Image (cartoon, rainbow, N blue to C red; front, side):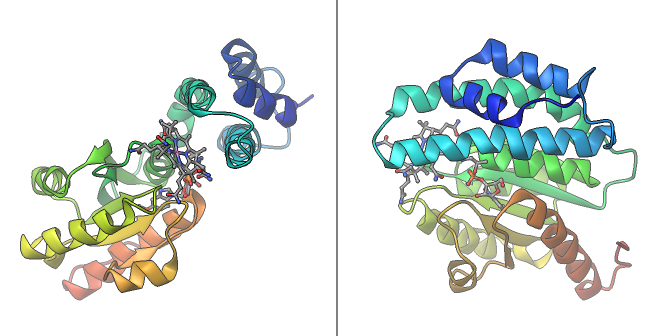
Length: 232
Ligand code: B1M
C-alpha cells in the first residue's frame, strides 16, 4: 500500500503537522511504494505530496483565500517534513563533482525552493553550502572564497529581488570570482530571458532540471580551465 499524496498535500495546506509527518513517515516506512527504491520513493513524496501542497497554497494565496499567517504555518510544516527526506535525498558516497554555494538573494526571505535545489544537488554528488535566505553578494562571495566553490546558485522569488541577482553577479565579476565559478539563477518569477540579460551562466525552472544544469556548468568550466571534466 502507498500513501495518499492528496491527503499529504492537504495536510500541508491545513498546516496539520501531525498528519503530514505521520504520512511522510508511513511513506518512507511500511507503506512505501514497493515498486520504487528508497530514493525514488522520497522524491515521489517530495514532488507529489509536499510540493503539491505548496502549489495549492500558492493558488489559494493568489485568490486571497488565505493570508500570510496560514502560508507561514504551511511553510513550517513543509520544513518539518523535509527534515525527514533530507538524509535520503542528500546521501552520496562519491567524491564531490562540484562545490556549490547556494542561497536566496538579499531582501528575499523565501527559502523552500532553494533548500530543495540544495538537497537535490547534494544527492547528486555536489558539495553544497546553503547560506540561506536574505544573502548579500558579500556573504555569497565570502563563502565562495572560503570553500573554493566553482558554482554559485542565486534564488529569487520576488520580482522586486530579481535585480539583486544582477547586482550579485556584477559584484562577483568585480571580485574576480567568475574566473573560477559559474553562476546559475532560478526561482518562480525568473526566466531564461532574464538569466541571459543579467549574464548568468544558466537558468533552471525546477530542482530536477537544476541538477543537469549544474553538472553541465561545472563540466564546461573545467574544460575552459583545462581541467578534466567529470563524466555523466
Ligand atoms: Co511569498 N510571495 N511573499 N511568502 N510566497 C510569492 C513568491 C508570491 C508569488 C505570492 C503571490 O502573491 N502570488 C508573491 C511574489 C509576487 C511577485 O513578486 N511578483 C509573494 C509575496 C508578494 C510575498 C511578500 C512580499 C508578501 C508580503 O509581505 N506582503 C513577502 C516577501 C517577504 C520577503 O521575502 N522579503 C512574502 C512572504 C512569504 C512567506 C514568508 C509568508 C512565505 C515564505 C516562507 C519560506 O520560504 N520559508 C511565502 C511563500 C511560501 C510564498 C509562495 C506561496 C510559495 C513559495 C514556495 O515556497 N513555493 C509563493 C507563491 C508562488 O511562488 N507561486 C510566494 C514552493 C517551492 C518548492 O517552489 O520556491 O518556486 P519555488 O522553487 C522551485 C523553483 O522555482 C526552482 O526550484 C524549486 C523546486 O522545484 N528554484 C530554483 C527555486 N530557486 C532556484 C534556484 C535555482 C534553480 C531553480 O538555481 C540557483
